[in-house]
Length: 401
Image 1 (cartoon, rainbow, N blue to C red):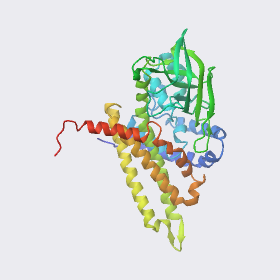
Image 2: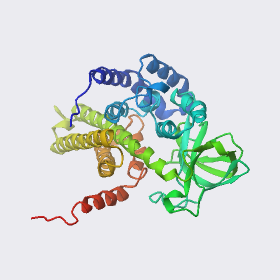
Image 3: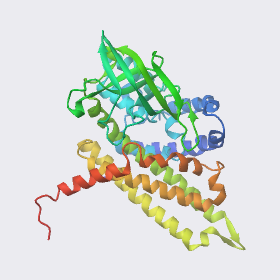
Image 4: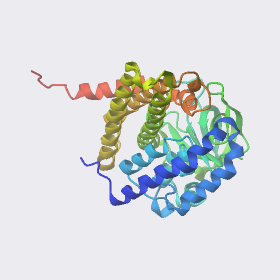
């Protein structure tokens, strides 16, 4: 396997690194202390700059205005953008739009692509993905109470969803709902496109996460669907294939997340090393002189490098053999990288002492918002069980000396 950079990527990655360093990181103090909507005009200006540099939508189809990068190349881009919370949004490859674009591209009708996909890739509108339910375990996607009943050419949707990321300000949601309750468990649900101005689509609240409700793109909503009616043609993909399509969406999405987390690791590691070298603890001595700090730096460097190679390997396999062939690798990276990120951010925060607890650096933001990495897109425990089962299957009937 070869992770060597193409000539194109050797040019693109330094440009992105420079842009994040010079254009986005300086915006973070305002991002951390002011309402996100206050920053939207300057963020839109940065997005225009990215489009002029022809770096917009790196992982999206060329025919719709993206760069069309494969998973390995986009993984490297995602790592570079992950250094700032604003990176993916400014470059047009942010979740949940990224996943919605993938499934609209693969399963959308010509009319759906024209109405929803094109403006979504262009960054003219935003979307959300409405799957998780309040009272049911997200680790078992078969459990779902939201229903969609076909009546007189319209889907009538009823149910309650939460953690619908970025619903606040979105133009439409892709909703998972049971359309065929009598079918086999994995063929009961479908995906349906629901414009957010449809009567019966009720955004109840932006859910406080670690005390922060957020707004606009940086938010997670609770949605109540009450006799929400949309045309029959808003069905996305075949009826009853919602779970199948969701797996197609989640596989590449986990690569994107893991590389973004590695970008967070890079940023936290840089801040930790800089703090260690410049924080005096006595005459002629800094934190960097302490062996425990040196140990944290060495451990972090090794863990980041190991996690990075695991993710690139998973992306390389997915590019060549597809998501199904890389199921074990995806499960492994999901919990390994999430925990690596948490340890690195925690060490960086500890090195910063009281400063790390404030929003004077980005570390506290990472600490409170990225704890969820071990929960969403499959909790750690689920991925560990899945990986173990696949590993053990390879030992069935096999002699080991």
